[in-house]
Each structure stands twice: as C-alpha cells, then as structure tokens.
Length: 321
Image 1 (tube, rainbow, N blue to C red):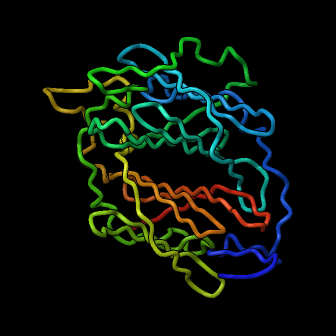
Image 2 (cartoon, rainbow, N blue to C red):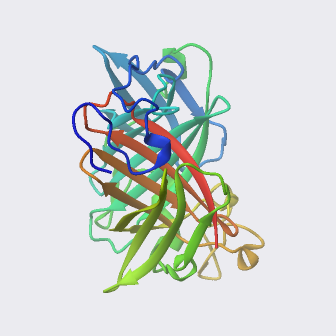
Image 3 (tube, one colour):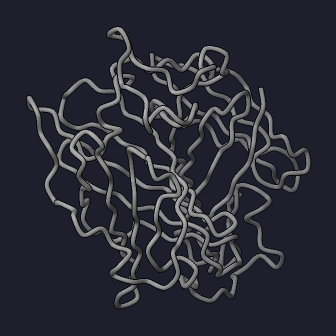
C-alpha cells in the first residue's frame, strides 16, 4: 500500500493503524528486560548468562558461554543491542531484543523474546574462519534471578576464544561433530499455511530453491485480500536444539560417529532453522523459523523506519504444510 502525508504505510492488516496514523506511543519500557539472566539448563554447552544494562538511554548486552571441554566460562564481551521490540506496533511493553557478538572465528546474533517471564534466547552462529563447519542455530531458556547483582555475573570469564589447529571455539556447541554435516533444506521446500485462519499477519509462506539458493515467499493479509511480499534469500542453519538434550552429558562420538541428540532422532520430523529479512523501505521484517516436529513456527522482529510513530515489535505465527 502506498500512501502520502502522515498516513501509515502497511503491507499486512496487523500494521494498519485505525485512523491511518501517526501513532502516539511512549518509548519502550525496558524494566522487564534489564538484569542478569541465567540459563535454566545447568548442563548447557552454550550461552550461560546474559546481562542487560541501560546507560544513557541505550541498552547493552553482555554474554557469557560455557565450554565443558575446557571447564571454562568464556566472556563474549558487551555490545549495544541491535534493536528493542515491543508486544505490538502500539505497545510500549518490551518483549524482545537482538544483539550481535563478533567472536573472531564466528559471528553470533542473539534474537531473544520474553515468554512467561522466561527469556527464549535463539542464537544464530555464522562461522567466518573457513573451518568448514556448518552455521548453526541454538535455543536456550534463561530466567532472571532477582535484582541485578554482581553476584550473578560469572567471575571466571576470559575474553579470548580458544584456538586449536587454527579453529576457534567460544562455547562447547562450536565443537559438535554434527556441524560437519551438510545442511539439507528438502523438508522445508513446500507451501506452509498459517494455523490461525483469522490471522491479520501472514497467511502463507513458501520455501523454494532458485539457482541453488533457498528463497522465502510471503503472502500477507490485507483489508481487501492477499498482499504478496515477493521473496527473499534465506540463510540456513543446522538446528542443534531441534532434538534437545545431546549437548549436556553425551559423549560427542560413539564408534567414530556423532552422537544423536535424542534417542528417537531417526523418528523426528526435523530440519534446519532459517533466517531471512524483508526490507520494504518503510518497514524491515527479520524472520526466523525452526522446523519443530512437523510445524514451522516463525518468529518476527518488525522494524519501522517511517514517521508513523509505530513501535518496533515482536510477533510469532505458526505454519503447517
């Protein structure tokens, strides 16, 4: 939809303001986010702690991860968050954030959202060291332990990564043998419909190959029918959390073969995670999804760059084949 003046542009019904705009929304209230968050899984091989602080009106994220192979906690340092997201385009209640950590051998972007006072922390790791390891997605559940306190912050963190034979590691997950396997998108390549027939957001998505590259096509809901967003290239990630528990105590190899993450992994309808960005000029939508036992939940971080006054916001929708 193209409009003029102060009327808000939109490409789905959920973003349309009742009076056309502009919206009158207070700044995002970050109080529910600020503090120290610890992983609920004490045997994680990944992110153990995230501390969020606010200084001079900006939010910073400091992350630590664990590496059972060395018995050390690794300090990823502190970065300014990439974005803060509310519950909706006219809400000021904080619901999520994104933050990117440059780790030398890899880049990890945390894409987190709040759910029932738990921080669902999705992390997309892209290797930049030429090691041949597959990029991967992990998911952790963090909880806040009361007021922010230095007692909650790991004391044994070290700022440098470990490098062995030219390969870097910033957490135990970086060592998983399954990262040596290729990423196969076959189970994603079809049309997916929203499980909510009354959605005012996205009604359908389609994943397809073009020139060897996976693309995502989006069909959204408008007031007068469907709105085609076109398609965007997709980056695929091995989903090490699709089958859960293998990162904790299992021996990484058995008879020279990778240990599966689940006893019933062969019966799990799993597949890779994905990330794509649609940039419509006045709005940018970052879309992540992980194929989870037959359903494809999409998590979206929506950003507005116009003068409509709408809040950047978090959204989740679920699709089936």
